[in-house]
Image (cartoon, rainbow, N blue to C red; front, top):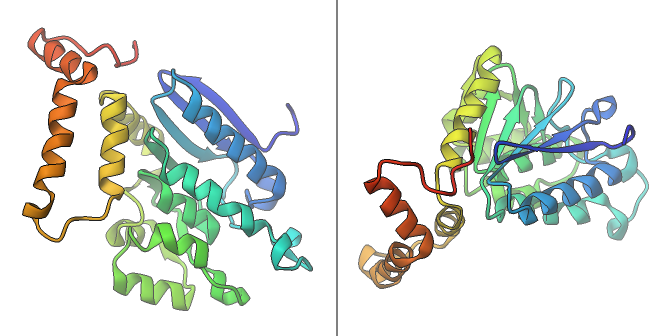
Length: 257
């Protein structure tokens, strides 16, 4: 469709979801939100998809909520009410989500960055929690941002709304890597290839593990973690991985070249 704002394609086990609304800096308009939710659900349900890549056209990754649509609406009709579902789709995706940024992210756009598992950004990309500067609160995105970044950095950047660069974003834990623009595609592809080597069920369970509350001591968690490990060692996927290792071949879940 020529008028769609989110494009979806699959190749080599990776679903690429592309935000394509450069006229408003890929702002989270009603149409873009609707199409993005549908694309994320499609990737989740597609057995041929192992990894999801979230990227964009135009110079900006995502400017946050569409402020033109927000103007004049009451609290029950604000587009932000639909945003938690999008963040949950990214955060809880059983398939790893890689965000690829060639340009800036602001507000809700930074929320999507934080919800992703791996984020590769060009060094020229910038970030800001700009909400306070227009009199609103970075409330929804705090639920995915705060587990990622250093507390002092959150205090500073949430309250000031100041712009910071990709190097600082990597330093505080918001993104995985800041790279030269000409290396953005290669670095993203490197992560995608690495992720497709992992067992699909093992990756999903590992994501759940990473998002779970940590036990107060190792001893308090050993029983549950041992049961999880033993179950996966004995699983069909685990046994395939063990046999493939012994036979010096790739497991059957690795996409063909």
